[in-house]
Image (cartoon, rainbow, N blue to C red; front, side, top):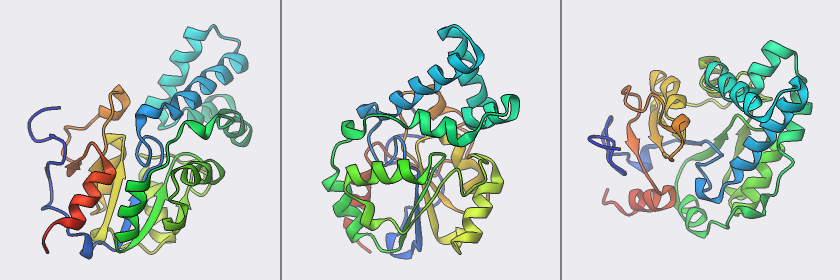
Length: 236
C-alpha cells in the first residue's frame, strides 16, 4: 500500500470519535481474527472440494469456477445457487466443517471492545453458527449484540446494497453514526454510499485489495485491537 492508504491513516472523514459512534459493525473472517491464522483457507479449500465433486471437475478447474463466482456474485455460494441450484444449507454445512482451534484468543480485542461505547454487531457472509464458533474462540461473544448473517440477508451477499439496507432497517442503525470494519475493500463501498464511516483491515489476498483506491475506504488499519485502543486513548 502507498500514498493515502497507509496503515492507521484517515483517508476520508476526520478521525473517528468513539464516543459519537452509536453502532460498530464488524465483518467476521480475517477482520475480527488475523488472516495469518489461516482459518478461512480451510473454508476456501472445502469450497473447491465441494465444486469439484458437484461438477465433476479437476481441482484447478474447480478452483477457477470458485473464484469466478466469488468475483461475479459476491460469494461462491451465490454463484452456485444462481447457476446450479445448489442448496445453500448443504453447501454451508459442508464448507464450515473445519478446525476452529487455529483461532487464537484475543484478550487485547476483548479489552478494547469492553471499553468501546455503542452497540457491536457482526455483519457476515457466513452463518450464525459459524460466527458463534469464531466469536467463542476469540472470547468476545459477550460483546456482540447481534449477528446479521447470509441467511438473514436471504443469501444476498455483501457487497449487494440490498443487504446493507436490510441490516440498517432491522437493527435501527443511523448510518451517520455507524462504523463498518471489513477486510474486503469492495464490501465497504455500499456502506460509504449509505453514509457510514468505513475501516479497512487489509490482507495480502487480491480479493482484499480490490477497489481499495476507489474512494470509499476512509481508514486503513493493520491491527484492529491496537487501532481501537488508540482511538480510546486519544484525547477528547
